[in-house]
Image (tube, rainbow, N blue to C red; front, top):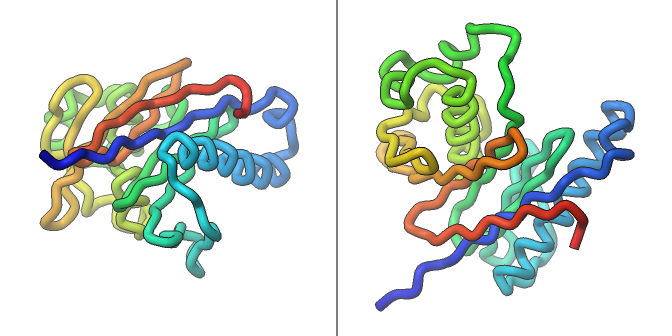
Amino acid sequence: MVNKETLYPVLLAVPESARRLPPPERVKYLSRYARTALTASARKSRITLGDLEKDAEGRPLPSNGIHWSLTHKIEYVGAVVSRAEIGIDLEKVKPRNTQALFGKTAADEEWEIAGGKSWDNFHRVWTSKEAVLKAIGIGLKDLSACRVVAVIDSHHLVVAYHDRLWPVQHYFFDGHIASIVKGDRIVEWTLMVQPP
């Protein structure tokens, strides 16, 4: 019997003082703070991180065969490490200022599979696709090539990108959704209010 890898994504609440920083300073802070969540994920995974480098376009490069992914919003940051391709994304679930986002994010057939056009479904589809694109390492430029092909249940769906299927798991908390490329791995989410 083969042991499946367990993923330990860590979500970390951003201190109130950091949320009030001016936007350019806040973005820098959140990027650094997400690495605190990454360190916690590595510790839980019993993985030693090496140098965390990015390519010229800002995409994380594997470190000693370890893949890593970060995400950050004003209220929370998140991160995960894995021995295989990995992607994580996080969004606050709230209405947006334009319905046009639905058409830019997914085709009508995908919205049917996802259960219709609602802001809850929008964030579920958006974070799933972004997590897959992060795992692949190409960013949002290929968003339209990612397709929702199945909804397994309220916490799992499948995204196809070219000839590969990417199972995604969702975690709902405090008005937010986090999505992670799961594959056949086990996922144990950790939500922290204080840094470790």
